[in-house]
Image 1 (cartoon, rainbow, N blue to C red):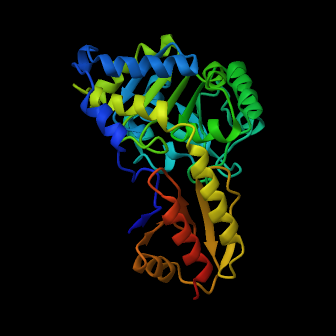
Image 2 (image 1 turned 90 degrees about the horizontal axis):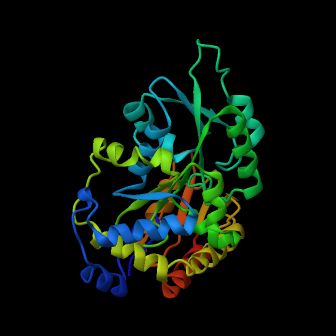
Image 3 (image 1 turned 60 degrees about the horizontal axis):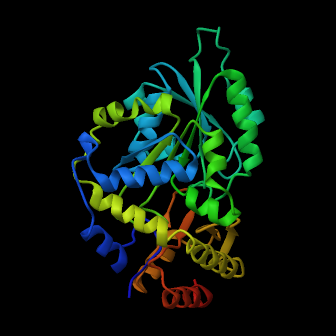
Amino acid sequence: MTIDLRSDTVTKPTQGMMQAIMNAEVGDDVYKEDPTANKLEQKLADMFGMDAALFFPTGSMANQAAIKMHTQPGEQLIADEWAHVYNYEGGGVSFNSGVSCKLIEGNRGMIKAAQVAESINPPDFYHSPLTSLVCLENTTNKGGGACYDFSEIEKIRKVCNDHNLGLHLDGARIWNALVAKKEDPKDYGKVFDTISVCLSKGLGTPMGSVLLGKSEIMKKAMRVRKVLGGGMRQIGFMAAAGIYALDNHLERLAEDHKKASEISEVLSNQSYLKKVEPTETNIVIFYLSEEISEEKFMSDLLQKNIKISSMGQGKLRVVTHVDYTDEMHETFLKVLKNYSK
């Protein structure tokens, strides 16, 4: 038995999901003739109260498309220094859109409205890039699955309105935030211009993200997706997996959160740990004591068929997910309790 806690992207489709995939009605999505893809897009647009939605193969492509739709080359976006769009999308902001990033030192990947306001370049000062977009991430990946306080997002929206800035949400794990904080997705649709939602993390599908947005900006989405190489044909098979996941895997995210919380609690009581970050959703980030070798710790776990992630700078990560069973959970907790350096 291998216990893979590197990410919630390592999941395999369930039997029910496989049945939905095999039974999907499909067509050519480049012609917008795939009925299942159209159904998924409409379902998500309705869920968030957005005007339009478009399926993308990956979350990074959906984010990069949104940035390109919001900006012009030479402009600048504002994001937290830990933002996925800056750290984990291969430099796509500059490569695809010719845009620079002004990075803010936030709290666990989250920034405040006051910080956003302070970071906006004067629009009439032509020596600096024109600020045109703010990108938020909820939950935060590098911040350990932290969830924004929605009232702060509303304050950031007001700053964007006051300065004529776009507001994009990297919602790779928005589902975890919605479940953990019992929030209404329509509230997010009211404050963001565009939102990317991922289906292949907590919801456990094989692939896919969907970009949601207001009609005016989403008019550009098909063209930008094509430019980025994201035009696909019979994607109804994957869209069917997304529909199944939304209908069957959303509420169960609370189980992942509970297991992550229990892992965090056990880790907090171990002498070989220096620090465990607060755990709100399905990500646990922790730091070993100085005298413990990260390489040895991960190697020792691997010998017991347990895989976790290193995020660099001493930051280790565990992510719970649908394929992480109760049996695996009990085994992992026992290993953590009995680990000796």
